[in-house]
Length: 407
Image (cartoon, rainbow, N blue to C red; front, side, top):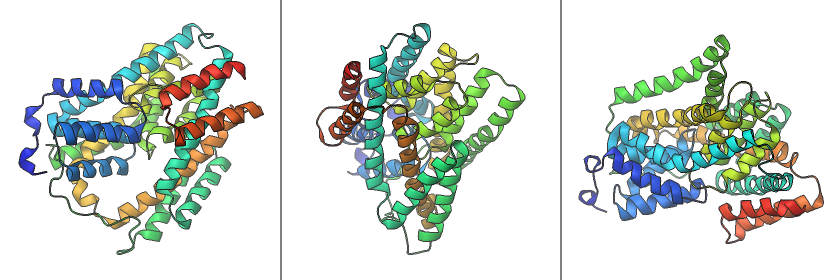
């Protein structure tokens, strides 16, 4: 596509960006991979905001960074068209529908604990087993090719099970990054296909100095929020710290945030295990980004938090790192993406996150949901339907909830 046929950023204001992404937020079922397809159809094929090469470059950036890849891609597209206001408009439009549904569901559970019958709750928890198993399988096929990556995945899984919590997960990712750096980081021994230069690099309109300031703000919040939460133990500040760290440290986005949030919220008693898995099951049945699960968790949080305030704080905190990273990195991306050692380290991290998610599949997802042979059969049916069937996740998960009443 010739560059002259593309629509440049001055032609789209923030309000227009919001309306476009609001429609996508209402209709984009299927998870992060499906979102990439929706975005390509809307912004490359239909609106011609950017070329195929430029779109692929943005996808590569968002997969490289920690955070919710599809939401970060939307932010980057909004940034390209409308600056920082456009990036915020894209995020609000895409996340708002599912965030409202998840927050309302959480508030309903708080005011009426019997909102979901026990059987439906159990069915949603079993559905989560199939959903996470499908994520592990699909991610493993793409990110764990070859015996060395499979070994890194297995080691990360074992390490996470032996050392539960956030410390084990972060240690596994750090060790995997060092292993990837050492195994594939030498010049000419790249872990993936060589990166081809692109002639239509997506421009953010931000200067390098602004990008550097945003990256410094990202790092400062990651460092200072835990200190502030310890110095002033306010519930909202502790929630912001927990969700900001989860959004800042999750590679792979989507389902990979599950073990991080479980370690941050269930283990300390902020959210019960049953509520956590029920909300995660419902999150599969709504359109838009899976990270809006944070709105549910913030709404049901205990210890003086929760409600609408908890939902908003949690939602903003989990998405803020992804916003700062994508906006801050875009001015430097073309140089960074050519660095073989950086890509090698990322290859190791990607294998490790599959192992971390596999550990979460066993504990807490399987261990707290599967109690009888009928549960195993239903979980396998969900897995098979998501892998090879034609029924979409937003229909499979509620159906599983209904079937749970007969288990």
